[in-house]
Image 1 (cartoon, rainbow, N blue to C red):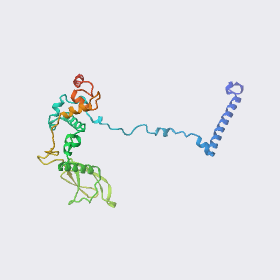
Image 2 (cartoon, rainbow, N blue to C red):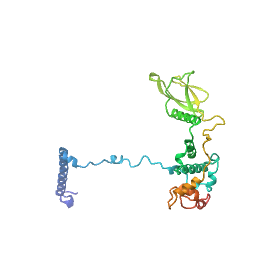
Image 3 (cartoon, rainbow, N blue to C red):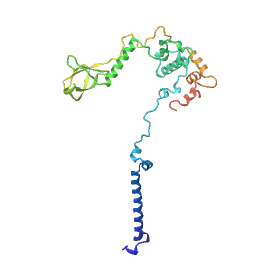
Image 4 (tube, rainbow, N blue to C red):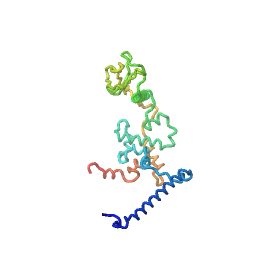
Length: 286
């Protein structure tokens, strides 16, 4: 049995008593320092605050937003057509998606990069050169319908109680829409009751007997009418010399300040490698 002098030196009763006494003195000093700090405001200010682990983890270490750049919505220069001169002489209404993109981008940038003639343009001419819709009665009508539908799509309906003679009109762009009825106000209010409202029928809420009817919102114009008609005073023929003149003004002296014009005229990509060579390297199937 381990007892008395049979214990090793480090477990001798005298050594154990010495260690316990040292521990008591150390704990006593820590308690005295804590009590002194609580009584003395100056010492309380000296003691640093230690953050608990959950407080350190609660600090956000990420960015909840990021800046949107124009490059996020642009096509690569590799997709630019090879024959830009033929492209700019074509009818923009008959072009495909990629050709139409580059046509209006080149035409819009040529308009902006021409500071001599830019202030002289009329509102309609500037809108056409930038590829924007000219404000007219037809465009205002369509835009008003879209804004009305977007408002009604996300906002609750507040109005008279729906009856057979005067039902609640539900706007929709399809033949059916999910509707939630919460009744009237005060004692007439009830838990939302959801149902499908289809075109051509009257629907009655099973809780408050309110009547609903779906009405389709149609985006269309009368026959032989355009939403963006070209005014007779607007020049709709692109002048290719604007691109050549702008490139001479902005891309001289060893600096490429308008890379789109440089790439369009010289067939390069970002002012560097030839577009044909890079396209050959990235041919489909290779």
